[in-house]
Image (tube, one colour):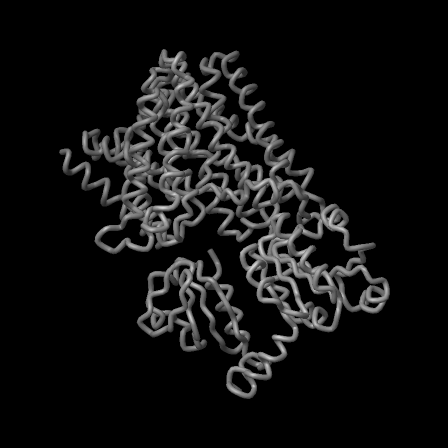
Length: 612
């Protein structure tokens, strides 16, 4: 019977996503579907899958890998103070600080969760206030990220704010769960030992920071050192966590954080995600459904009454998110964002698992919590997708600020693709402003070039900053200030190019644009390579540079792309190396392609390949 249960579980893990794809079920997270199928196959209905030692082991490993991958989901660039202390305009035109808005939103969630838990105790529905509070404030980070990526708003102010709220809704409840389990497990005196777990994480990070770069160079198909290191980190920190009295899921989560900070390649992330979501994690979700006993739940009037109350509490706990978002974003998207943060399943399941070990909750109550979380997890993405409306600001890929108004910047302003860029031009020359204000829609006059003035006015609130004054030194000063303010790409123009300056700017991560060199390069191209010159200046065809992020086109040979005959791929940059493309070249995530083709097709293909 053990072998049959394992076979059925693995078979269902394969079939469920296939059936969902065939039926075009996109609004329900796969994890929720796996729990529902587990309910049907378990003790609640058919009882075809039973509890076995094999499934228990694989399920426990599944939750550990799930927490590891959750730790890897955190984007620390979004937590950068430089990036979030500056206000950014939302789609409603208001100035938004994503970190500040998210912090206030989650603070409201924490307060609301405690009040709801106290209310349930007062009504005699559930007596453990601490446990209920932790569960109500959780957010399913993985589901939130997947939904935001699908809407392509992860990099916009509202997307960043929702994501940061979700990060807090996963990290803080996990830390609180560790404290809860330590205190209720009778080891309150050992609570300080949890610090040793964080110390161990820091030591592992510092120990493998440099060796990891070497691992990436020497790894091969038969060694997979990056994957071996990931599992070493998992078991090392899980072991330390168990030894100091913390929960093993906290150790797994910290292992994911350490792996993220080691800056793994996209290929490594894909391999780890494939291992987790391809095998271990589906077993955990299916077994969760199998273990639910809805017969006992429906036979118990008090527990059955608990179910609708829990569903309402999950939504009410996130009401402060909606109210906070409404002060920064339009009401429709604020409502949708608040609804999405009510999604909760990832941390709820491990939390209930811990509570069951501590005998802090009955099996029937645990089933009610899980079923309520499943209902919420089904409803929230559906409501978000049907309510959220992309605004023009949300659709823009990158914001560009050009400081300096001249004939070249005017041409750039007019030619930059308005589907990809939002361009703002700044000048501190009144005569230039008066001349071009009727031609440049987004033109702003500054009184001077002082760095404090620029910072206060939000000039560095951009993805790309370009300094094109006639004064080379002023370009360098403003460019360096923009880089220090956290701007992702900074480009400065220089009339006279000095070798030492070029090397220094490269070390600082600042890109150089030299007018004289450009004119000479174009003339040389016309003389030596007229075909290249025609490609660059052709108005009917376009030359594009795209980083391949769409997983539908990675892991495949170039010749297998359905549109490959419509473009000409010239070069492929992989890491620090350029490679010559062939039809048999397998495209990897993060590859940078240089290609040309008719501009309509090239434009469509650029959007397709760059979509995450």
